[in-house]
Image 1 (cartoon, helix red, strand yellow):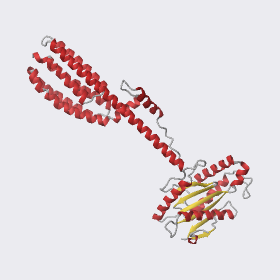
Image 2 (cartoon, one colour; image 1 turned 90 degrees about the vertical axis):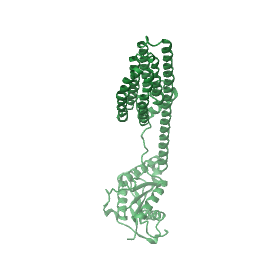
Image 3 (cartoon, helix red, strand yellow; image 1 turned 45 degrees about the vertical axis):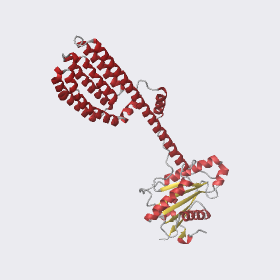
Image 4 (cartoon, helix red, strand yellow; image 1 turned 135 degrees about the horizontal axis):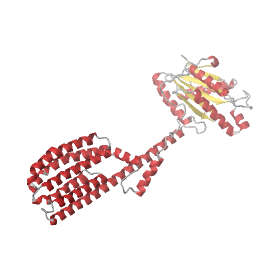
Length: 443
């Protein structure tokens, strides 16, 4: 009746007296006693709503809620650190190049300017670069860069206001390169740049006041307008640049969240497609895939695979007497009991169809599988679910067929193992039900 049955020994095993030496066995392998519960970690709904609201309404003040603001700075920390370090290094070189302008515009201050630029500003800049590289808080780096820009402006103001040269007033226009470099090349954040530029404007006003007697207003006013124009234009560029950077970051974040939601939904759908909705154990599709996996593994390492086929006795009569809702509850209880009794990482429980369940016990010899089957049989009895229509027992019982094969045996295949378990189940039912019948390999 079975293809290849000549390679199997057939017999009845008195399983009630068989010990269970592997009852508490734990070994590495597949942890698939049933489909895993769906990942219930919720997508941050509030954060998602915040992002949608910010993208829809905008953020004219260039500020996010505290948590998003911290993430924005953290995500851009490495990129900003690199930009500030490169810009700071350029500042050290270019600021010292202004010594040529000092020599041409305020020759009486060249010696002092040389000392200030080379021996004060340059060391301060290098210390600032070290702090930018080492200082963890991203926002602190932005204000440190602002401080370096203000320091450069202070040195220029000092050189101009201390000089007695008639060109000292027009030389206040040297503040313009500082503004343009900080706002455009260093791409400072808008509000730190705004604070720096306001202070620079105040410094310029102070310089005009100090130099009013030696520099004509006809020169100072156009220079002030040039500085103001440079500040307005570059600040606008800072604002637009940061706004676009923040908007693009929000769009990327929203895309990541949507992808995460899609991946989670796909994972749930995949798990649901492998799960029997009623009993919350694996379905036939998952069983077939899992059996093929463990079969290939056992064929390589020479281990055995046992299969346990479980049938609820007289289930049609149970449904006819108690109704289908109660029948569904009975199947759920049986499935839950199976998950409690078959807990090894290498085991898989599946609903085979109707009132039939099937379990894979990878690496389990026949005696171990038969002992586990007897525990399952007793476990169902201990549920004490009344079954008045059963000619076997006045309670719900199961019949179990057990088969065991070595996948590396000649002619062995998964279909043969399933057929052997099905035949063992037939034998258990034909011998009075509520019992275990086992087929095994010859050793």
